[in-house]
Image (cartoon, helix red, strand yellow):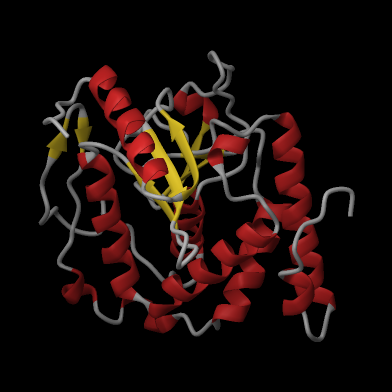
Length: 264
């Protein structure tokens, strides 16, 4: 393929071309989203059944991935919690931004934020805990943060909660504790902002702000912008269902991960 620059139209054409190539190569469920905020082609590898996304020249996504990897290096509970939440979201069919629910990336940010909010915290805020050791600007996005994670070894040792307890806390918070009317979660600040702070109080085009999750670098980006009233209701019901199962069942996992069935 020819070299692709940063122009949106060039990226859109590139993912369309990749979609055709992947289809010809026998990939499954090829879906080209050339008009998405970040043009992407999605597909499933036929042998491993691995779901894959490909974007073009998305430098910010690479830095986001580095940030998440650095958070994961701080405490093994984050990776374990994320694995469980992603598996739950996949089984309950609430894990695709293009269908009006939340992306895997959004769920990771939700997990990080929860661990920043525990008392005592499991994770620090890498964008404010110390002067930045990683410095990069992508377009208008400042991506500076403290990435010398070895210096923070043992940060969360004062918190002795198990992954099971953190899982229950996650669903309790999103079922009952989150202020959906006013609050924005922000791992960039390690706390909360308001929708008024972000000017996320009104619908603009197809973007709604019903479940607000600030991107840590592109601070104009609400990861929950794709959630509409119908899918917001579905998400909140799923959070409540999970919270109730975890609090009431002596053997919760089979029911928690029970596949979603339409009308069931």
